[in-house]
Amino acid sequence: MRHMCIRLHLRVNQGKKVELEHVILSASQKALRVNLNPDIYGTFAEIGAGQEVVRHFFRAGGASGTIAKAMSAYDKDFSDAIYGKEEKGRYVCKPRLINMLNHEYRLIEERLKRGEHSSKKFFAFADTVATINYQKTIQGHGWMGLKFQTSPDKAPNMVILHMRLHEMDALAQQASVGLLGVNLLYGCYFFFSKPKELILSLYDNLNRDQIEIDMVEMSGPDFDHVDNRLLSLHLVKNGMTDAVIFSPDGKNIQAADILYKKNILALRGSFRPVTKVNIDMIMKGFKLFEKEYKVDHNNVQVLFEITLNNLRAEGDIDEQDFLDRAEILCSLGQTVLISNYSKYFKLVEFFSKHTSRRMGIIVGTNMIMELFNEKYYRDLNGGILEAFGILFSRDLKIYVYPFKDASTGKLLTTKNCPVHPRLKPLYDYLIYNKRLVDISDYNPDVLDIYSKDALDMIQHGYEGWEELVPTYVDTIIKDNRLFGYSPSTPKNPDYEPPKRQNEQRLNPN
Image 1 (cartoon, one colour):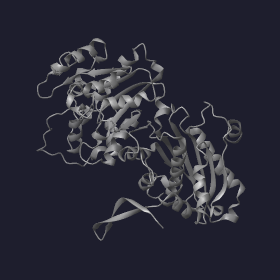
Image 2 (cartoon, rainbow, N blue to C red):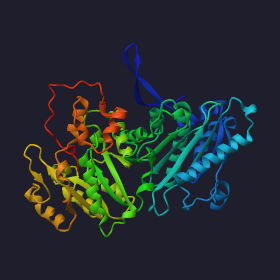
Image 3 (cartoon, rainbow, N blue to C red):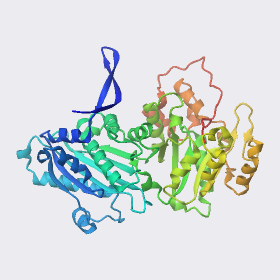
């Protein structure tokens, strides 16, 4: 059989790393392998984008041993009669997908006697998809999922994902949905013990230009060890999407579900760990933001954003370090955004896909110096003006928190921020029009606090770091042994705190 090999993996063999070739099968090969397995048996229910997934299994041969039923409830009334009405009237949504999966899986259990199918591993596949419209003004997207057993005596697992379809032709989008569905079903059965491999396999015979996967969630007995926040990180890390969001309870959220028509306020940082200055920034920035006459204080979504650049500041991404940051932010009741947007105008573009309402970003004054540094825009044909055109053509305000230089003690605000004379007229224009707004009621007692200092003190067994972090954060760090904390770490008498460097000096714009 013909195959393609495009991914390399490593394994340990007698203490030596040996390269292994990962074989990527075609959709028809995957479908046939599933069909020839006598124990995999279930149903397909697809709404929108044709019957593209189940078509692969019918064409591969041997489908009678795999497919108990294939159906599509295109008509709204028929769909409602089967799966119930959706409260918000939306049919391409996560609740509809879950209703489909639960309904179809329940029917399998009710209609097939387990005694007569003792070796069967049941599954229910479902998707609800809207492809690009005829006028090409609305891009396609959809939800897809599988509820499945890995053993006849086990409770089922569930894997669901949200996809954005980027091709400009409905038939091409349908074909891509078909490939993704085959990859999902195959991956769930053959890679369920390796969740990262399962995620990577979703793009077999596909690429990001065709489909963007911006949310994935795994649950069930075989995924009890899986942290869905890590799955979010891997989506961004592997280039499957540029931004993912998870809620305070650690659940992955599709961006449109939480940002649609919201007033968005974002704070970017390392949060390694969260310090009192981070909390003062968000509290004082929020206070200014909610006073804006275009802001509905009941409709504000606050986001703590961590970029991949920030996660890679110490080298390759440390998953435990990421989870330590996430654990604290979630414990504080915050919604977290992980993005690949090193430049702020890209972040604002992302927000603008979901809302046209007023947005706000909180930054330190030192970040303003970086924002007005032209070297970061050399890859744009229009340079800094192109980036600022994207930033400020939206209803955006930037709230500027004062920065205290650790070496000089000088306090920087928008009034004395050093900006190149060539850009000073643009800078003055933005201040005059209140697009750059000083946070003036800051807490002066926290200006000397830097995450880097707190982290060094934690890792070197030094006392006093508790005073640098918000109430209860020290308890969270100690109870969960975050950031390498250990009560038995001996205090290093030769340790001297490093010269303070503000956490946001990474290329931030």
